[in-house]
Amino acid sequence: MRADPANLWKRASLIEANVKISKMLGKSGDRAASLTQCDKTINMMEKTEVEPTNAVIRAFFAESYADLGEAYSTAASDNRTPADERQDQWRAACDMYRRSLDILQDMLNRGILSSGDTGKLEMVAREIAKCDSLMRK
Image (cartoon, rainbow, N blue to C red):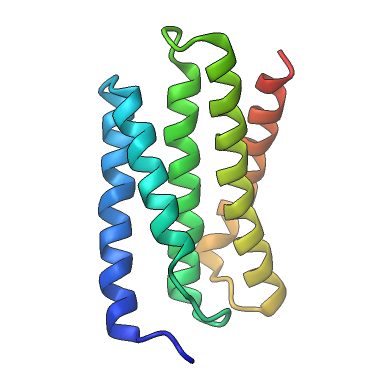
């Protein structure tokens, strides 16, 4: 069964709003609310069926996962966060960046990655390396 395109655009809009809320809450210092919003957003994304050839929505998902990685990185960078929780947040950030990279790599392999999105591959790979490095400390 194929995903309903109209419903998919509505879900994508809701996901976009939730991603922005997650980042905003993290930047404002409300770590707990940001992490709750991240979980809610990830759950929504995981329940959203996207055709593998839908380049627009898949690129949007790749960007959304990278933005969630940024939200987790913000939480992990907060010195008020206990050390064990910081490690958890770095792991979550790396996971989000890897999900983004996986989508972008798959799109590249399928020949549907736009030229405007190719730079995101390198950016996400750098963020993964940064997360991995910080988790080893």
